[in-house]
Image (cartoon, rainbow, N blue to C red; front, side):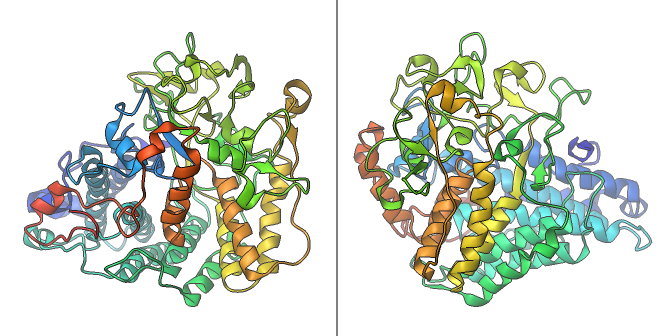
Length: 575
């Protein structure tokens, strides 16, 4: 069921677009609802639904909570579009040149996420006002703490130093005195963990409404946050990783324990996670997903418009597609495999992938649409190196993302044209493969390489069997699919390298890459190397440069600094 994502605005007492420093007392539930209303379970349930709904209604094509707009900073993807001036503020982020604190996109994502926290906190305040006899009170509070943690998590990955709004009863004066440097980096992650622990200790193992988080979803979220927390960046004058905390890694192991995920597992085919049809949504691998819907009584349904810029512009099909978030050649090359069926690691980018001669991991063809192959596995739409498949006439190449797009054959059902293209396909936030990779990473860092490699091999075994959509590719299109598991023994350092590579291959174009590089403390070295090697494929990188201790995080928006009355401190390297 997706009904909890249909917004109930009648009792929403939050203004349309308020930032953390803009909250007013009269916007708080206890100031606008009578005592009897505050104790009404019906009103509390409606406000909870409204809090869920904002995680679809507050995002849009330029500020997707999937973070694809900001993953263009990674080596996985080009910005795309018609050229560098099309979405110029995202071009500036892609090449890390000319990024200003006044850029609208930086303030926009800040405001939208704090607006989401505002809605959640209003639900929490209303729930706290209900009678203890309300049977769902504790569970609904746990769900809201999960959502609040989610919004703070997205903000913290983007900006690092953020104000935490974890007290839903703050006065107007207290709101405006919040500091974005009150907590160290480590303490900030702990605040998110505190909300998640409340959720974990209360949430049930299953939910009738699939959009509500379960105990396993909270465990997966905790594992992810502890993994981020483990890579300590607590020097206020640096974004470098100063240490990797063993206790945090052990927490990752604890919250990825297989016993916590008895209702979950890997899909038999990776592509099942990225199909819009109802029989594939909320499958065994989906721990928690943003629920989108169609045919729910409204004009367009509760569709996902945040991917609206990504579809290519196919005449007669996706007319008006904007062709953003295009897979990089570097990512394509990473899927090349050697004679042993394993990644080429440091040499994968020595030459560009050639589908006629090179072996490839099957996940390449489930992640990237490549010229000479069918778009979205539909032979009626063969990709070519023409302007049809590249609005920039090749500036950003001709590859297309497959994980966010939908087969044009489903136009009118699961792919809908409004102002932009939209789909009812869920967006999985936490999937079980990610849990396995996080467990593998923790094991590798803790010096247990054999356990790490076993988990990586589970992912690779599934990858090898993910051929339902591409089983005819070798015979029909001449591609060479070859993937093998790892065998033998590996050192700690080798295991860490293997896990990091596997994470890129499995999670490619899922908007995790840039944040992983920052978390590992490798962003500057990896991305500057990428810039220098990618110039031949994408000329925009000729003047690009990633500055360490600056470009890992977005600057605090000028509007927010100005409104804070001196309580916010700008991130290092920015002004």
